[in-house]
Each structure stands twice: as C-alpha cells, then as structure tokens.
Image 1 (cartoon, rainbow, N blue to C red):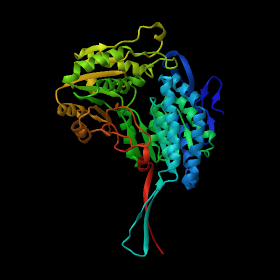
Image 2: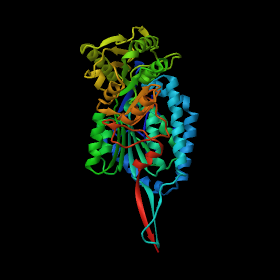
Image 3: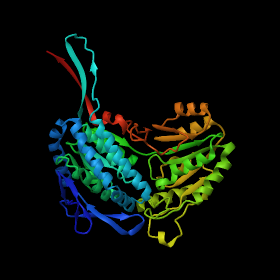
Image 4: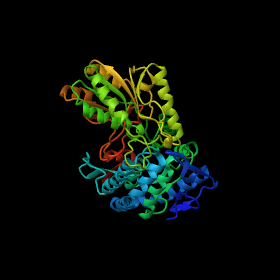
Length: 488
C-alpha cells in the first residue's frame, strides 16, 4: 500500500500520496513493554511539510463539500469495512505501540469501526429546520455548512477511537482533515489512515502528518488556512492550542484533563462498586481522561470496601499486553512512568498510607518496560497532590466521608469536571448526584470511564472548552449554521 519504506518506516499521507518529510528525519516509536524494541519510525515533519499538507486539504475542500452527505457516507462505510477486516493487525499495532492489553485494543478498534458506521449514517440525516417568516410570501430555513479545513490533534491513549471520533464527523459534515497524531502512537495512526486511503477518499480530503507537537500541533493551531482545531490532550497544551486558534478567529474544541471521583454510599453493592472502581481507575493502566482517581467512601462501609478493593488489586496481573491473562500493561512511555512514580512519592511524602503497589514490578522479564504496580493510598486528604492533580496512571486515592452532602461537595472540589460516578441504591442520593455533580458525564452504579459513541461527550470547568464531541452533538462544532431567506 505504500506506507512502508525500508525498515518499518511510516510516511506522511499528503494529497493522496505517502511522502517522506522534507528533512529526511524520522522519530522512533518505542514499545513501552520493551524499551529496546522499535515498533516503527515515523516522519519528523517541519513547517514546510505542514504547509504542503494544509494546502492539499484546502484545495480538496470545495469538491468534497459539494458531494452529498450520502456520497460522503459511502466512503466512511468503506473505511469501516476495511478497518474491520484489518482489526487484528491494527489492534496488535496499538498494543505494541502504547501498551494496552490486546483485548482492550481489539475493543477500541471495533469501536472505531462502529463510530465510522454511525457517522456514515449521519450523511442521510437532517441538517436544518424550516422557520416561520413574518413575511407570508417568503420561505425561511436553516442549513449547515462545513468549516473547511479541520486540524485534528489526537493523544496516545486511544490511538484509534479518538482520531476516528474526530475525523468521522468532520468528514461527513463536509470538512477536509489534517490529522496530527501523538508521536507515541503514530504507527497505529498510519494504519488507520491507510484504511481511509484504501476506501478511495479523494486526494487531499484526509491527510496525515507526524512530528513534534511544538512544530506540527502548534503549527496547525496557528495556520491561517486551518478553519477549525479539535484537540484532546493535556490542559497545558490544550490552552496553548486554544489561544492560538482564538487569536486568529478559528473555531476550536478542547478536551483535556480529569480528576474523576467515584462515591461509594453506605448502601452500595460493594462487590459491584469494587469492580467498577478497579475497572474505571486501573484498567488501561489508568491512562484515560475519564479514569477514576478519587474514591470517596462513606464511613459506614469504608473498611469493608477498602479490604475488598485491596484484595482484588493485589491479584491484578501486570505484564505485556500481548500475553494472555495480562490485566494491565505498561505506562505508554517513560515520561508517563516517571510522572506516576513522582505522584506515588508525593503521596507518601504528604502522609498518605500506601496500601498496595507503589513500586516497579520485581519480575525480571518486565525490567525493560515502563511498568508500575497498581497502587492504592489510604488516609488521603483533599489537599494532597494525589487528590487534586491528574496522575494518568493506576493510582487510587481513598478518602473517607460521613455524609452524602460531604461526599458530593468533595467530589465537586476540583478544577476538573469531566466524569463522575456513584454507587448507591437510594433514589434521593441518585437524584442529588445527578443534579449537583459538576461533571459532563455522570454515571450511576457504573464506573467513571465509559463513553458511548452515540452520546455527547465533554467536560465542565477545566476539563474542556465546553463543546461536546460524539453523537449528533458533533455537528455543532464541525459546521456553522446558515440561515436562508427565500422570496421570489
């Protein structure tokens, strides 16, 4: 298909062609399960490469916009079928490149297929309304028009689902796309784009460019011909992207961090709550923006919950994501491992009690990977760093409270507001939680992590720019409303 050259080198995809960066330089993508294994080399692109990529997207925008929604949807259906056929290959690439277990990687890739099919169907749905005019001889209605060129800046933690849930709506609503994936998972991104290329999308409609965030990511945000930017990643980078877009009047969408709480009420099903807390907080090595981080437990069930939680966490198998039976793989890169270790050290230094984990695994066969044991802290107070700052690792902070009012107030005591969950059978608790919780996603008797593709997703406070992704809500970002007044 042209994506390889030489020793597993992956190229940019610009204007329908696989091309090397002008510099000739590449960046290695390292397997986090074995720092000595290079999964592949990706392009170290420059501003010159970016200008060529954006120009290709701009040139393709007019013809793509004029296609019917149904015709654009046909391309997405084809891409979905190709991705489904290559599911095992793409999932294995994801596991080797960022560490999540193979079952999780397969599930994420299948979700990418479903997202493509969902948005392919959006091409046949309404894009406007008829509005009564005060003039009885006139017709007034709204339609929606694409932004033009959309820059997609995606993170490493969901290297298939997140790029697709941004690209699919952008494309179906008539935009052309420039994808800048995280370098850590750019090999997987190339395989995803290869599916679009094989589906026959016209040259320039979808483009892939890899390189440093400071050059390519920020360059996209600042580029005069990029009409919209959709970003998922850290708050620091997100705000820089948003400021650059705002400065030149481009539309922007930011999905950023979370410090997501789960509340365990005194009437909770503790077995269900323990399983949900572990799945929400430790699965994917805690590397989800919706991952459970703060575990707020009422005093009446605190000890019982803690014992059940610790016993289950001790039994979790850490290992290579391709090995059967592995429950959590490594951190995605060395910097992320160092970040998690630093928060464990802060937790201990600030007086939290380490109940389980807190160290690198002792197995010799894991020594060359970026592994960390799943970690649980007790006696955590709300002012501690592990209770306030996003760790993005398998670390749970247990906090004891006496009342539901205290629990909800503490859950809201955060700069973030992405997701939150509660385990309770009490309808009053449930209604109070739904009404009072300042989070974009609230879940009852379910883990904090878990976003359905047909539902709007996004956060409050510092977690997002207050727009929403996924579902039919995506049309709000990727299009502009045009009001039409028609009179003969």
